[in-house]
Image 1 (cartoon, rainbow, N blue to C red):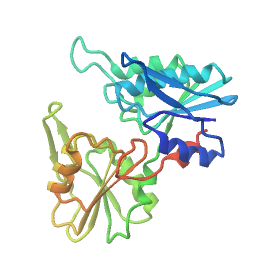
Image 2: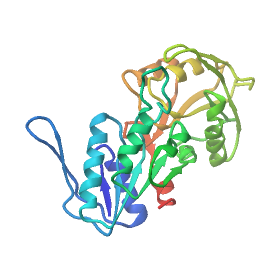
Image 3: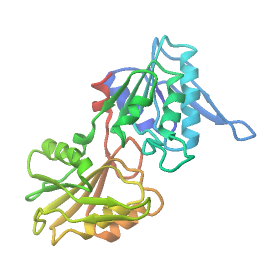
Length: 277
């Protein structure tokens, strides 16, 4: 049975259809003092909790869903379409926590297995104290793309070029390349253009997550006379005015998956998750 978190109802419903397993009628409420309360009326021998931890409240809700599922199920599998805090996989300054480790340890207490989609740092899987499987859903981003002319798939840096290649391969045509990126601080990032020719071509920018939109906007500014510019990402966080930044930068369309449910969530990662379950 699929047990959905309140922030992951679309992807949970899609996964229910993919696996032909029932969807639990989970309920979400709060006590008068603001504390979270969930209820899972019934589940099966295997409970698959599907919950993106997009906020601190979502983390608490996930732990409660796991516990409620454990009360009834023999096996609990936790699917994290998006894992919050995964970008803090080390202490950046003295005295800081390794937040990804803290969250992974907490999640591990209530599950037999974890499945997560394109974590920002693959090393976070080592923090879980139960088996953790990574799902690569980047190829799903090719599906909503229109017909492209001489497409060029670009990632913002070398570490994400495999994502650009995955989208290119799924699309079935084009080149893949990346920008050179130097991060001097959390807010000071320098991006240097790719050697690839972008003139009179459709350019597709690919990344795992778009948070503030600043990096993508800077990358777009480096493009020379592209025909059209499309932005794709697995996790469309799009915090604050990120979508407006991209529009101002000249993006023709933004496509994301449903790991984080946004207006740009044009394709589901459910088929890719189902393959790992």
